[in-house]
Amino acid sequence: MAEFKELFPDYVAYSNDSYLMNNVTTDLLREIAQKLPRVYQQLKFDKPHLNLDGTMRNACDIVSLYTNNDKTNNWGFEYIVRDFDSQVRDFEHIKFHKFMDAMRDLSKSDVVLKALNSIFEDHDFGYRLRDDSENPWICINPSIGMSVDFEEVILTTSEICQQTAEHIKQAREQLTRADEPRARKDAIRDCLSAVEALMGYLTGTDDIAEADKKMRVDTEKWGQGFIIKDGITLWNMFHNTYKDIRHGNNFDISKISYDEAIYFVDKLLAYVKYLSARSLGESNKEEKFIF
Image (cartoon, rainbow, N blue to C red; front, side, top):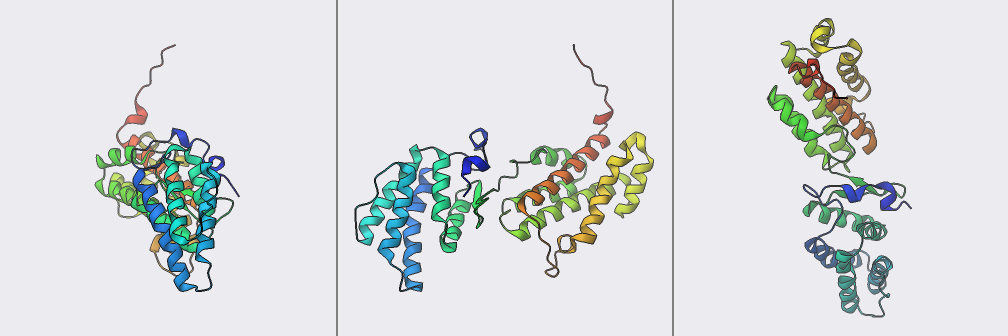
């Protein structure tokens, strides 16, 4: 089972401005310590044969492996819960990756996994758990793993085509739920719509194919054709291969992994960034180098 620091070796360098990326808060730990025991109680209600005390002890002992505390010696649900609460709160002073590995081990039950993800969402936590032993964590911070900065592209396109900027904002929002297959597809769809809107606006056309033709003819303005054709190429690929992404239907559902979604969003944003720079004349400015 993959450890968190193997999946995100540079996590200590991430910014905590928008999401918690490399630390935990007192409020987050408090809710985990208080909510998980209630989750186990509900499990006992749904499955009367469940050994509630034993389940709670196992959870407490899992946490103790990462907090370097002794295993609980208590029996009786309320007493074990107190130990669990104390153990979880210790993560405030322990390395972040140990907290993440502990949460991974606690989430082997689907019910617990969903409960933890719900808590993470409420506390602007930058990661979500998933049922995948090789890649148990995904990052939902749109700025991580992207070569193109969302905020930079939104700012630039706002000066050119507001509709494009709005589509990109929607894509950014969708990626905060990247653990959901539909959200990943919607992020790609919004980026495709951003490309379509921008190409149409810059060429004064209503059809992306016509916009592509106009741009490829004007190489002085838009640059080399093999770059420009990326827009129509991606557009046609998603229309023909991933029909449910473009049109949002629930039939013939295609599969897009998290890594694929990030790749396509990044590629589409890079294209938008390129067109924006060309339209503002930034790519044609003379560069001066000091040697």
